[in-house]
Image (cartoon, rainbow, N blue to C red; front, side, top):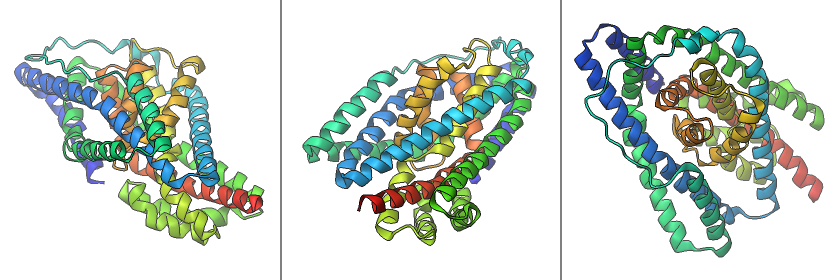
Length: 382
């Protein structure tokens, strides 16, 4: 919650600086924004490589039929959630985001003091393929030494995220909003923020309602009773903003729904990493809004968004279990597939962090549905 407050303070500070600060100060802010944006671009492929590779390689310790069903159900839930979010957002948001917003986006006459280009080691798609090939290879060959190196690399990336990227994001957002305030596009952007955030949270609740209604009917259980049992996990995730930190409460909630202990102990910790339907809903909704409100970006159509959603479902496996981790993992796809410029990526970060607690709560609560279905499948197999 402190991160959200810092984010709001960053937006306010950027707004005031953009309106009141002299041109020299604004040029300094643009310089800082450019440097930090370059650093984010450098880190994106490394996040994808080490997190996805480590995640796939770790699956060999939990191999078997139960793993296959869990991964399949989690991926299916994530993809359907993303498709449903785009179907609703693409019909609702155009009524609130006028075409005039796109035309007001102008390049700022201010220039940074200097620019420094930091090229990534490889591009995003290369990082994804490298992670899949080596992750599967490690899982199959049980290359423990390589796995140890990958896990240590993941620890280093996680340290950079926790100590550098995430803490400095509010300052980065302040620089971005200062630039938008200077070029006159900030107020149209802020008007859209509230609509997008309300829609994203409403879609979370709608998705959970559908999940538990269908599951309750299929299992002959009262959906309201199931949701009530998972409510402690939902409220805990609202406060922690971390699926990993909510695992103990999520486990207890799953077992209170009469999920068998072996299934709950297996599914809930695993789904905390691979089942991010709430985060996917938020990312798809926010991406649709940013594409509508930013001049030069493609109009969000099914042909553009479907490939993005399918790859996003895979990339969410790489999301670190920390506040803002999902959006940091998704930045690569946003830049490579949807061609988001630096300013649009910053808007995505701001939008995502503003509702991160609700997205995490949706993720964790949805894990209970995966556990219920897997419990039924495993009982039928026996």
